[in-house]
Amino acid sequence: MKSKLIVLLKFSPLLFLIGLFVFNLFNYGVLDDPGKVLYKHYCADCHGENGEGIKQLIPPLKNSDMALTHFDSIACWIKNGMSHQITVNGKVYEQTMYPIKINAVETANVINYISKEFLQSDKLTTSAKVTEQFKKCTSD
Ligand code: HEC
Image (cartoon, rainbow, N blue to C red; front, side):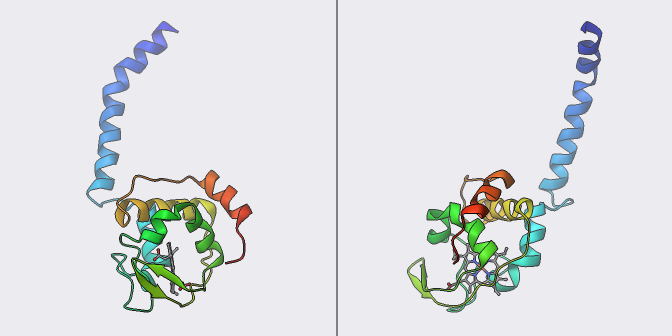
């Protein structure tokens, strides 16, 4: 038991350095945040690389009051899509977002990316939470 502890202590600076290295890879964009990769692939065509939306057609995600106040609904919007009149940051939109076919882990990653990058929020979700939310989605 004691020797295991000593081994662990011996290697802890090494583990720390490896952790720091991986963290930096993410930070300097060598490894992309999985949420960012998913966002670019599944959402950016409509909502824009920087979440700016497209004129009157596609609402922005950047500082979206709707997304922030209904944070727990985003998972269902992704799963089922959305097509009714909405107001985002004072502007009315009425178009269709089709369901996006990604799983709970991917959905959680993309929501966390949006939260951090576009909503400047520290709200986070997990795949377990998303799985629960998926079960309770009403249509639209
Ligand atoms: C085909 C274009 C399209 C794609 C792709 C798309 N959306 Fe949307 N999204 C829309 C439209 C259009 C609306 C508004 C729907 C309405 O008016 O009812 C919307 C609404 C939203 C909203 C609520 C309004 C707001 O701006 O806060 C969120 C959040 C959102 N989308 C997130 C996503 C995420 C995350 C993805 C990728 C996983 C995604 N969307 C992919 C078109 C799209």
